[in-house]
Length: 192
Image (cartoon, rainbow, N blue to C red):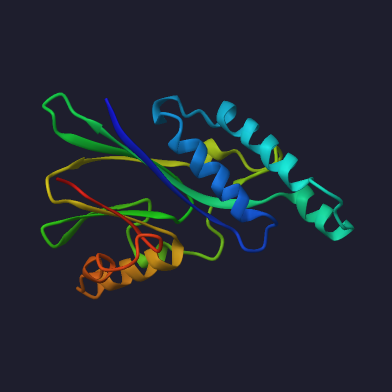
């Protein structure tokens, strides 16, 4: 049984209407179970919606050129499910450098999809809003993890994820600072 789905996306700043594209991706993922996620059937309706929204009203020639190229975003979606013995597990899919961190008993036990701060680059894989964008299935990464009571999960976009891993590499506990932040800045879930 599904216990919940969550997603985060980070629009590429050089693309037009990237915030709208990010919103479409996350809302669609949260409203649709992960096992049925198939990029070839899942993305076309979202791309059509983005194009329709981007084309509303008259566009200048330079805006039209940007719309023709499309918007781009990183993406991370995950869901909680119950195991046979009534435990919980998570399953995640990611394209790019938005990250999921799992903390247990004051230690980082899982980092997905990146594991070291040096893995962050200025050109992460991105999901494009136009049909001619790169094949997402070849860019995705997936992971599965088990949850224990008291585990904390953090969802971050690139800058916060990079900082988080740098702090871990310096033997610090970044989750202690993030636990007191506004949840709109960093998503967090605490297992019960």
